[in-house]
Length: 377
Image (cartoon, rainbow, N blue to C red; front, side):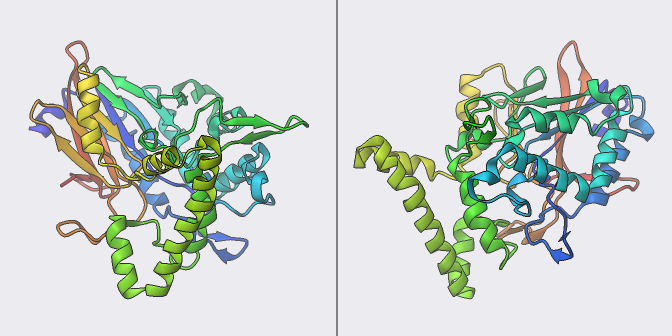
């Protein structure tokens, strides 16, 4: 039925998230274990497919729902400690990413060169340093001047973007205190007028703990669920896993607990706050049910962030989608692919704008062919 409906489509909305463009596989001739994106050709092919052929004269809106650039995984700049979060350091990191993935940048420009196409970029927690206006200006400068008005960066405190009535997008880090940041209040300035980003403690954890252990095991942040990763790690990679657990606990106690105790002046309040902050990778489907109760006008909620693609229809016809990631992931749950390269994306085919009728699916990009994608299962 979806193929019969395709010709009636008035607009196609594509949603991808968690691309995590980094500094490249090689940096100064050395292997970069922090680079998580290895699908440049596939992404270029994807962008080309949806701007040519049958889509050449159709309206296509591409939404990148957070973490397009991984500014937390670029330590190869001449800045240390708190200077790592300076505006100058953020620009230096961004320039390295641009240099490492020129084909992707060019493909995005080619995509919006079609008058009917549009690119929307929602800021996530790994590219939160886009709170700096200089980074946003640099991003806009990557596109031809004649195409610039077809590019839009979404940066607001709610993180929400509504591409069509009844559909709400947000990256998903907003649900976790460890990764939440305010687009305006997270900028500080020193006496000399230099700007600095005040990152959430989750960003500190990524740069100070996760990145260090990725140099030994580059899969350390790519295994789900985390609980099974730790259990299997203790059995099969005991010393590394115990060191990782100890470093995580030590970091949380020293960086968060002591700071919160000084701030709250109450052990009970401190423990309650810590428990709330440790609710990483929440059950987004449960959150969605609460979200739908509060927002009865919303028919579909689309998030990313956890790297776990899912499509969940509810009995009332509403839909929850997690668009997953375009990085390599390992899943230890039965019934799921152990090692997967699922380049997943949501596709919304608007059939009638006035009546707000659309067909929505979660797909896996398979490459240019007679059937370039398959529905997610």
